[in-house]
Length: 78
Image (cartoon, rainbow, N blue to C red; front, top):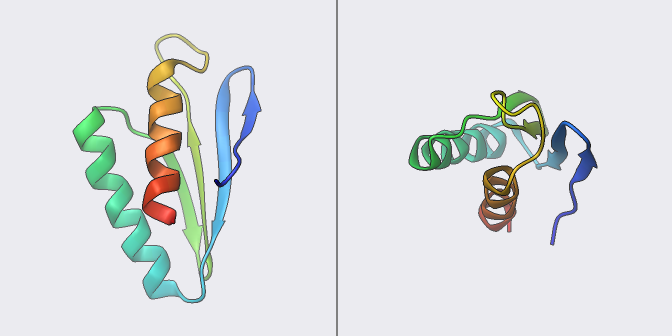
């Protein structure tokens, strides 16, 4: 399982890929997941990587929804 860094206010993880096309495909899958959960992460990406941070803006802390998003993101990555 891909481990996330947990801070009091967010979960964050860097995912690595072999090429840009894989990165964009992964980010596109994340947009579908975000819309499904109605929970939208911050995503930064470039050649070979995507960095994802998730937190509940309204609660300013990590919630169970953030944890679910992280777990399901791991499943997409694997």
